[in-house]
Amino acid sequence: MTIQPAKLRDPAVRAFVNAVNSHDREGFLSLLAPGATMADDGSDRDLADWIDQEIFSTHGHLEVDNESNGGRNLLARYRNDTWGEMRTRWSFTVEDDGRISRFETGQA
Image (cartoon, rainbow, N blue to C red; front, side, top):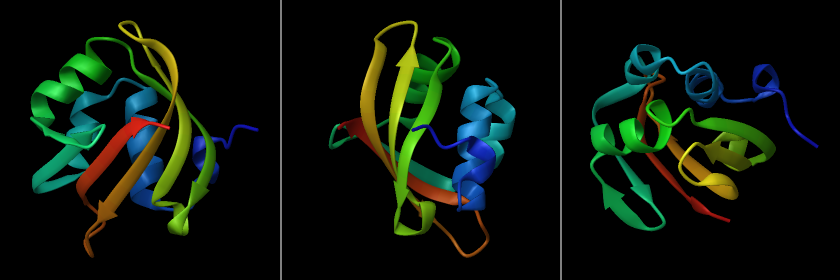
């Protein structure tokens, strides 16, 4: 059963999902702490390149099926125009100021 983004527990993660699903690159970037990093399937990636290739130029979309760790870990169906739909996991590190300093994703 899908969890509606508005019901996600962590405000930063909720805003992240909303930015992805509304294709709001500027809003997405505003959620990130300076020097934020990310990994895909266990490998660190260049964040700017990755979000352009995997989210914003390919119409990325997240449908969250489960959340844990206070809403900072997600199990979701992710789809984009390149890869289609896949089951994915997402993990977020959120700083005290509410900005995301790291996220990790990969196939679940």
